Amino acid sequence: MPEFFNSFKTKESIQTKQSVWLLLLQAILLIPVVLGYTLELIIGMAVIGMVFYFFNSIENAIILTPLFIYMPVTVSSSMNIQVSEIGIVLLILVYASTTLTSKQKRPFETPALFPILLFICAALLSLVNAKFITAGVKQVLRMVEAFIVVFYLTVNYIEKKETMIKALKVIIISGVLAALYGFYQFKVGGEMTMGAERRIFGLLGGGYGAFIGSSIVCAVSLFVFQENRWEKGFLVLSLPFLVVALLLHQGRAWFVGVFAALLLTLFLIPNRKSLFRFIALFLGVGTSVLFLLNTNLIGFAPKRAVEFATVTSFQFGLTPEENKGKFLSILTRFFLWSRGFGIFMKHPILGFGIGNLRFRNMITGELGDPSEEGMGQIDNQYLNVLVETGILGFVSWMGILFVLYKASRKLLDNAVDWDGKTIASAVIGSLVVFFLGGLFWCITVTHEMMVMFAFLMGLLYAGIRLQRQQ
Image (cartoon, rainbow, N blue to C red; front, side, top):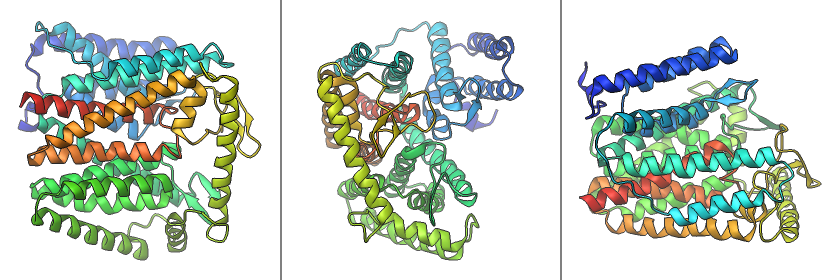
């Protein structure tokens, strides 16, 4: 077996784990057959199961998580099953097989446990006022999946800094795949057409910019603080595509978040050599982006459409003269926020109901069934938590952000070597993208955004644990 694949072996008995995995794989294949799912679903689950059977390690199952959530392809439209959900199920199966076959008991750290449990309890209590109970229960299960399963497995099962760096590389690769799909989407017309304006959303909706932004931050961090020339070459090739994808997405909040995260990277730069790398990367990527946009080298859309999208991506719509469509979008947001605050005043303690704040009409503020397609959000994470889960949920969410702030300070203070600075810059910068983007989007509404946020939280605390052990 090649040396690369040998690095994915675990220390436990391989023979025993293979037997367990064969049983699990048979179960994975048997379930869709019994339920009468499509052949495509069977093939897809078999391939994914084989991948995790080969990469027989909980640590590697964790760092491959972004590959599933960046491209949440719908595997079964009738059952509304996506690859991202299958990926988390398989992660749980890997953990189960590891636990069953390991004879060693290991300590299990539970940082931020109190605010997380309080947040989940607040969500459960909010179901008292929920009109759509099923939507609320689904949302609670997603919260448990993200903030308990993904978060704590990431905290406890990443054993080395090298594995952390691998996780950052997977985020970058996942971002490139999402960017390429976005280019294809732009070529065929995009998800949104407003006159000549076209935007790309990948398979992630309005949160697309958060994922692409995280990949950009990770790529810049690795380029500035790591030394491998081959990796630098890959990053130099990847960044222009990621930046173009962010431009064509035209998400104003994510632009601000990425800019703030890059300022953090600049703050961590320890010497002139690294500063020169940062400046050279900025100039090189900027030149490459202009070249791609002006020559249409990758051929994904007409030059005129790309130029229009690029110009409008820098327009924030603060006045109707600047961009009438974005100005109306800002007015709509303010109206929805005031509408949401009015709903909160009717249910201030327990909230309106987790997963229930959806708008059928964004102009009139008419509420709708969350299970229907095309339902709008309130486009503000903090207000969404306040309205859906009341004061109790809002306080617990702010408690989560507070402990994350303290953990970030701790990781930054102890980031003394190159790997430490890479991890601190990439992970904290990515969280900053989510924090600031949450002012104009909702983090805990979609499954993929919630899992990605929890994954970044886990990387943050895993970094602190590794610093303490070192």
